[in-house]
Image (tube, rainbow, N blue to C red; front, side):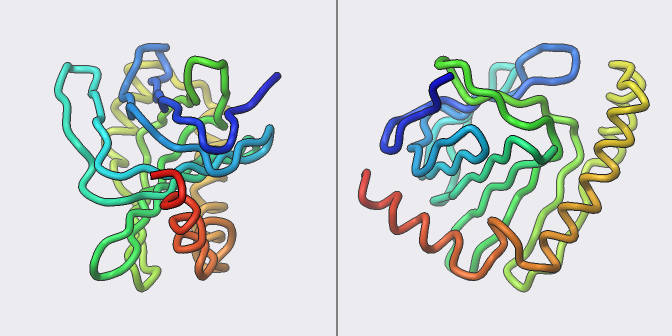
Length: 175
């Protein structure tokens, strides 16, 4: 299997457990693409929602996807610091069309001081019932919420000092 090449532009697609498309990010530049990790950068890109709405991101961002973790992160570069939006979802797949994952509703927002807030627990409970998430998914996601919080506390992976800044510098080379 080939993986997205450094410097190439890809689409990111998130789906729901029922297989329906949830959201599409139109253009992300690949900064690193391997079977284990994909790191991408984007800035003010078009995002399409499943209900037809469209919007643009407001700031540059560095995205981190890991093939072994049930979460991905978006480090958003703002004037007052780096904010992270972390999606609990399946590990990514790549199929030449797009980088894809299943979004499981739960999110963690991390602030520049590394405090965080778990979001959308009500949405998770609703979709869990509506889409019949298997018990194993619930177990995996709860374990990965704890793993993600551990990464935040340890400043591991995309939360490590200078991670977003370093990859943003590389992103600027492709603009």
